[in-house]
Structure formats: structure tokens, C-alpha cells
Length: 450
Image 1: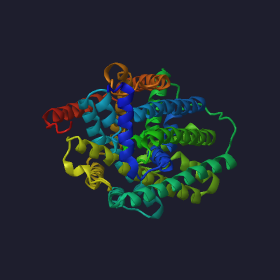
Image 2: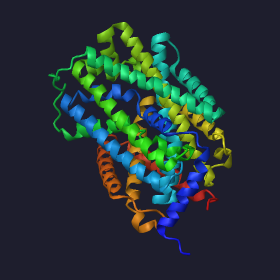
Image 3: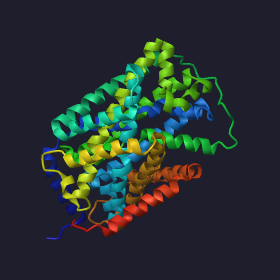
Image 4: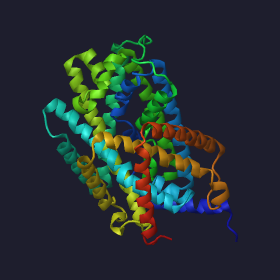
């Protein structure tokens, strides 16, 4: 009997569904995973930089557009997750949709930059904010200790990993809700009357630059895709987790930024330029206005908790990429892990790399490099969906709404990358060197996968 294209996709989906019967994640955990990956300190900083050249209306517009583009990206990945219900995120999708070499490149980017660097950034921020309240200390040493503890939790077992992450997400959600409630009840809710600190000669470039960092603040909406096979029902819950989580964060970000632009003018917002040294965000200014010094301390503790949650979430999903690469023979089999247990060696590897990055690079360098990499590979996944109809007969055709979302996301990503490369020319040789090294490794790596 001849198998049709739909039969093949259906049988593959059935087999993956059977593999996921031991999954430990459900829809609620998936939404929490997405929220935890997305929400960090960036939402309390970006408006301060943008207010120097953009009005309140354009700042809010940038966050609204950022939410729309993130939802377009989530819709794109939701379709990819339906077609390819396996763990690995960009590594798996690009290997299937474009070429294994591109997926391999994305996998190495995830290992070296995509997860390890944001983990280092978040852990460093958590330690710095905690020390700002409880006493001085070495932020890098504190961050390294935090990563080591979380690595232990996520390596022990699925149950410990799940409940550690779920508990941190609940704390993060309550903190964001408390900040919004405080701002809406005690803050100024009149339309802002301030004007930008400077009038740029060209509006497009500062808006594009602001949108680029807004996009980084929204990054993480694809978190569930990295651990798809850890879900009990991956084809049902992974797409829903990305869409619901992204929508919730988009609403929260708009509310938070409304509170910030309504209560802080550009002159006060310049405090964000001292963030690396002073560890003060716009959220601190608002909280101090309402509650005094106690409010500022509570904000520091809250942001520390938010960043601990982000660090934990990345430590949960990132190692699933390396486990998939090991399954395909591109990394040592030790990293694959054993059935019914977390990929412990991959968890330890990512924790170790994150600690190394703390001491090898400044936090500013990590942030600049990560943003471009994240946008680049997610855009390639969107492009890959357009190749399915002609080049991937074993997969079902993507639905029209998904292709529309993919076109929007890919087009906006190209525009943002173009403007980022104009203002940060160091990104080009950095990405080219990293890509060349990874592709050389791909050519030299024995292919063990079928």
C-alpha cells in the first residue's frame, strides 16, 4: 500500500506522541517556561534609552510592534512544532527545513551564545541586585554560585527540575502583577507631556535601534520548542504554550512601559546609562517614588528573583538542544542522557559554559552579541517554512496563516538586522567568524545520524 504525504506525517506524529508518554511538562508548565524565558530586567531599562530620542507615543508603539512581531514569531514556531514535534528548537527545525549544516550552526550558537550567555547575564544581574540590598559582594562569584546551585537542581531529576521552575515562575508572575497594580493605583495615569531629550536628524534609525532591543526583551517566546519531547502532548501543548505565554508577556510589557513613560521623564530616565555600576532601573525610580527607599529595595529583590527564574528556565531548555545534537551524532553520546532522566551531562556543560562566560566577557559584550544571533536564526526558521511545499514532501504543508506570520517575522528581522549591523559593525565579523568555525566543525564531524 502506498503511503501518502499525509499518512507519513500522521505516522511520524503518532510515533512522537508515543515517545512523549513519559513527558513531565504540561500546558501550564509550558506557558510558565515561556514566560520565565521572556521576562527579564530589559523591560525596566529599554524605555530609558529610547526616551532620549523617542516620544512616549513612539516608545509604546515600539513595544506594541514588538509584541505583534513576537506573536508572529510564536505563530511561525507553533506551525514548525506541529510539523516537527521534536526537541531542539532551531537546531531541529533548521536541520529539517533548510539543511543539517544550518541546523548544526544554530545548535552551536545555542550552546555557546543562545543560552549560556543569557544565563550569565541573568545570573550576574540577580547577584548584583541581591548584593545591592543585602550587602556588597563579588557579583561574578555570586552568579557562579547561583548557576552551580540551579545546575544541581536541574540535573537531579525531572520532578525537581519541574517544581523548581514552576515555583520560580509563580514568584515572577506575582512580582510583575504587584508592580503593575502599584503603578496603576498610585502612579500618574495622565498622558505624558515630556519630549525626548534630543531631536535626532533621522527618526528611522533610533526607532529601529529601540525595536531591536525590544525584540531582545521579547526573546524567549520559543522556549517550549526546545523541550518539545518533554511534553506529554507535544503537538497540542507546545504551540499553545508559545502563543499563550507570548500573549501574556506582551500585555504585561505594555502595562509596565505605560507606567514607566507616564511617571518618568527623559532626564530621570538617564539613570539607565549607569545600570552596569549602579544597578538601578526605571522600576526602581517608580517604586521609590511610591514607597520610598523600601520600595527601591523591594524592586531590587524582585528583579533578582525575576532573573533567577530566567536563569533556571534557560538551564532547563538549553541542554535539550545539545542532547538532540548528541542523538544525531554531532556531539559526544554522553550528552544525550538516559531515557527517563534529564540529560545531566548537557545540563552540567551549559552551567559550566555560563560560568566561564562570566569571567571571559563583559556583560555588555554578551548582550550585544546575543541579540543579533537570536534574531538571525529565528528568522531562518521562518524562511524554512516556505520550502516545505516544494522540498519536504514528508511534511504536511504549512497553513496560510502561518506563512503570513512567517513572512512578517522574517521581513521585520531582516530590517532590524540591517539597522543593527549599521550601528554595530562589530557584529558582522563576530558572526562570520563564529559561523565559519562551526561550519568547519560540521564538515570534520563524522556523521553518525541516519
